[in-house]
Amino acid sequence: MHEDDDVREFWNRVADDWHIQIGAAGDSNRILNSDPVLWAFAGDVGGLKVLDAGCGTGYLCRQLRDRGAAVTGVDLSERMIAIARAQHPDIEFRVDTCSELGTFADAEFDLLIANYVLMDTPDLEGAMRSFSRVLRTGGKAVLVFSHPCFPAGGATRSMNGDETNYRWTFPYFERRRRVDPPWAHFTSDFIWFHRPLSDYWKAFKAAGLVVMDFEEPRLTEERFHLAENPRKLASSRARPYSVAFQLRKRIA
Image 1 (tube, helix red, strand yellow):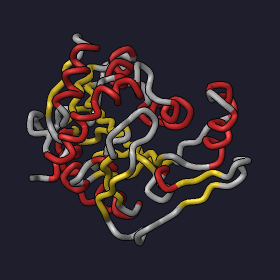
Image 2 (tube, rainbow, N blue to C red; image 1 turned 120 degrees about the horizontal axis):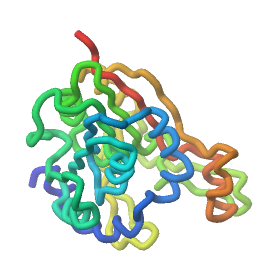
Image 3 (cartoon, rainbow, N blue to C red; image 1 turned 135 degrees about the vertical axis):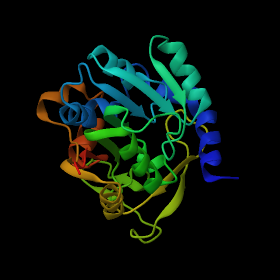
């Protein structure tokens, strides 16, 4: 079985639960921490042709459309795309893999967003080559993914919330396919791929994408009131959940 097939089967299996988890606005981590950075890096999307790569059930596509973008969503999971099409019949969605994007022409998009996708993608280098290929020269990519240095699945918080500890069972510099146990209301193990942060930077550079900005999204004071409970507030203030990159396709 090809690794993409394994990942596709997993996301088809959890798609309906994922739709419940993400909903119409994204989960609490996105709302509290990373969405403000994502939109700051994306800028004004009005009139832009935008690809939401790894769109899931389409919540971000709807937000992009509402901000004036001509958006297309793509995901490798047929079930994810079926839910997205049912929820947002006025938006174009396609089944395709980030490592290929074979249904898209070269230089088709002004902006590409991959929101919590790259850590779930088996072929990082292939995905970055595809992202670069479908962007026009000078086009922009905004990439948000789970922080590889601080894996949420390996974190434990002290009872009073003053300490966060991370447990590593393998060398950080070793790329690995990982399986985490179910969380929240999910019943399936989660498949993801660990790579050191430097491997991402190298993949961007090799694909002709230049880093323009970088951030470790964090909860800012004006958004404290959005935390659903004191423990979530303390956790979001204390540790990074993700990293965010703003890239630009190199002008030859």
